[in-house]
Image 1 (spheres, rainbow over the protein chains, first blue to last red):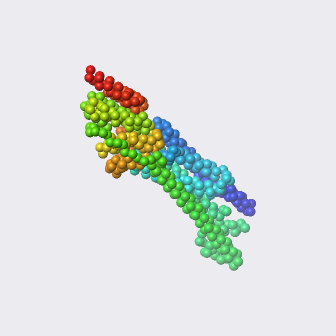
Image 2: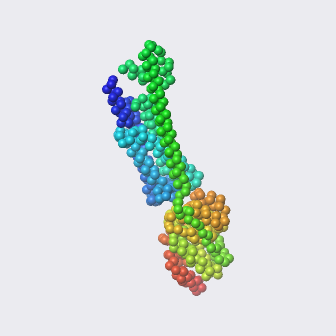
Image 3: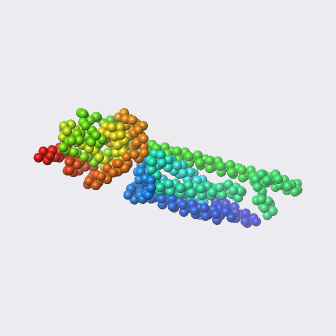
Length: 173
Length: 268
């Protein structure tokens, strides 16, 4: 019994998922990483087309209008590039937890990812408002990107709940 | 040890008081331990709520900053002062984007971009002379068409000129845009700077803001640019003096020569 307790303690100390929870937690992180890669692809595509107008493929709405508007940039930085940064960081933060890296505690990593996603989603809300009510155009790639962020946010929230708020998690340290 | 551990796991929040007291000291100890576990859980929960509350507030503030920065786009140049262009001298007939008599024998069409420095130079320095020498006499009419190819500021300025046309203010606005030209892509024609131009020209600012705020007339600008491309325009300014194409204008004399040739061709 003492040995088993010691094992549990050491797993917790590295910030990794514990016991029966470990497999679903790993799956959650893998799902987050897959979605981050997809999001990275979409945001990367939008960044590329910001600089190469001809490459944008649009079937509905008015991607060009959105992409070429003054709202598509912050200073010289295209907003799509912020998306690239966010999805890259999310990928990295999920990888840190999946590999039980001791660079930062899992809790801190989760908070950073969660806060970043919340910022991103609030910003997507503003940008969608601008698209619908200011530019009267919608960029479907931007919508896809925001839905991916929303899906990752849901997964991160579930992950955080299971790793911090369940009794098992609360009794772990 | 094993027994205690099982007991601890089976306890749920709020149930420890209902645990039957089997025997004196061990039961009191269990109860105290359960109490401690509960308090620890509550403390941890509180800590996590505070952490995530703080993170949420930070996220909200960061999003707000990003929104404000985005709304106030094109920073410095957008705040540059705005000058109103001098009024066109004399009582010159004007219809939309055509200046001068519709019956003028020589028709000049310019394809221009509001960010193109040479177009600005022509508008500021040579056009007044052209008006004085040829347009006021009815010999020449001059039409300005959009060939917006230097970026979003060009398109926005071109759209703004059409918004001004809705208020019969095309020419004053057109000249004022060129009067306030800055370096390309510096944000010279950010929305708020164009609105300030409209204010300075005593236009209906609300109507102008509604027009420029959306994507009104974007397709007109695109169509005009495509029409220019179809007619062989590759750079701005490109002039068509009747049918003769002239790329750029090095001096007023060069333009005058072309006009004189056109007038002679008609006369002969």
